[in-house]
Each structure stands twice: as structure tokens, then as C-alpha cells.
Length: 278
Image 1 (tube, helix red, strand yellow):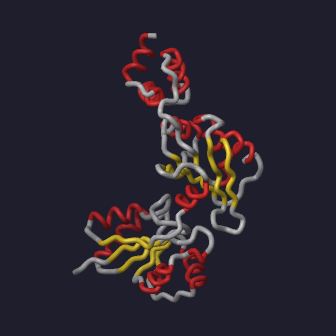
Image 2 (spheres, rainbow, N blue to C red; image 1 turned 90 degrees about the vertical axis):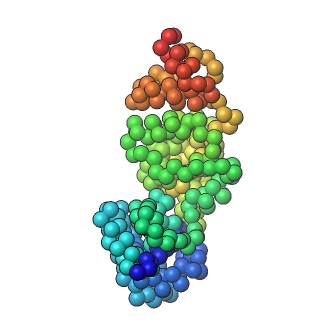
Image 3 (cartoon, rainbow, N blue to C red; image 1 turned 60 degrees about the vertical axis):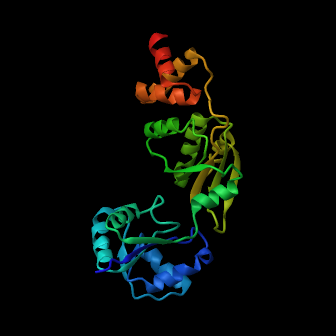
């Protein structure tokens, strides 16, 4: 039996008219539609004027592990399965990775309907360098874990993109300013492509002040990377102090030394020697 096809379909991140034309065709022709939220799927079908006879199955964070084997079996039986999430491309901070990995492992054909992406849209309107970038998704909710993650990004030279919930945006901007410096250029992209779209650009310190008010809507943060490589002066005393500071945040000494070496642009042995022989 010939296996089916898994289609990852991008859905609008705001305006339904941004939906790629092929999305309607795939919705109408699928054997099975796996949807993060079946109610939103029904609204999307109505908005696009699409009728479908597809079997609809929910596929969200809470049932992704259990549902994946069922969907894989349907693929192996020859079905064409369309995977959609609430907005944007499946598997990018949304359900989908597990199913894609399982399909690839079993030689099932995987393709995509390209379309709206909050990551690329935010990059494009941020005004920050876009020649090299990295997507970091959602930062950890716990302050200590978040600080450790940001410490690992302190020497990142590429522009960074983050997703964040509106009620945590102020705390995250403050953490970014503490980790990267308040003068680091950044942008808060709110409600992209929607009626109340807003892009606030400026140094992180200014964005922290902006976020003191009520923050609403879908938030994407874009932060410029380090310019010029090394960010720590070549002074063993500075290295020791910085290692101690990072350790105080709960990072192991080994990882703290590695991080300081990255920031200073020197071999980790030099920082190790400065810490243990200083």
C-alpha cells in the first residue's frame, strides 16, 4: 500500500484574506484535518467559504503525544492529512514536530502550504538586521531558568526573535535589558497584521518603560544581536567577577566560565585559570 501525504498548512496570523489560495484547496481535498482548535478550524472554513468532507481530529499540546500514532497510522493507510494550527506554520512553537518526525521516520511524504509567519513578519518590520537571525520561541517562565537561557545568548551576534504572552512581556523585556544591556536595540511587534497592529522600536530600556502599562494582544519580540563579537574586556579580574555573577544566578561554574569565555572571545582555559588562580 502506498502511504499518504502529510501537508503542513500555514494559516493567517491575523487577517483571513492573508490566507494562501492553496489553503482552501487543501482544506477541501483533505481526507483528514488535524487541527489545534477545531472551533477555530470551523470559523476558518466559514470565512474561506470552504466545504469539506474530511474527518476532523483535534491535535494540540495536551494530546499531541497520544494522537500522533493514530495520525501516523492513517498516513500509512494512504490518507492525505492536513495539519493546521491556530495561526502560522505548524511545528513552529505549535503542535506538529512529533508528527513530522514520525512521518519522516516512516518515509511518508511531507510537504507544506507556505504562508503567514509571525517570525518573518516581525523581522521584516522591526528595522533590525535580518541577514542572519535565530528564532528562540518562548523563554522559560521561571526567572532563574530564563536568566540562564539569556546568559547563553549574551554573545549571540544574530538578530533574535522571541514569542511572548502579553502578561509576561514586561518581565521578559526587563530580563532582556538586564542580560543584554538597556541600550540594545529591539522591537515589540504587537497584533501583527491585525486591526490594532503596533510596532514599538527602541532600546530595551525604553521598551521596559513602555511595557509598564497594560500589554495586550499577540506579542513577538525582536532583539538585535551583539555587534563586533567580544563583549567583555580582556581583564582576568573582570572575568572572575562576571563568573561569580553568573554563578549567583544558579548557573554551574563550568557553564559560567564557558559563557564568559564566549563573551570575551578567549579560550575557556584562560577564564578557568583566572577564576582558580586569581
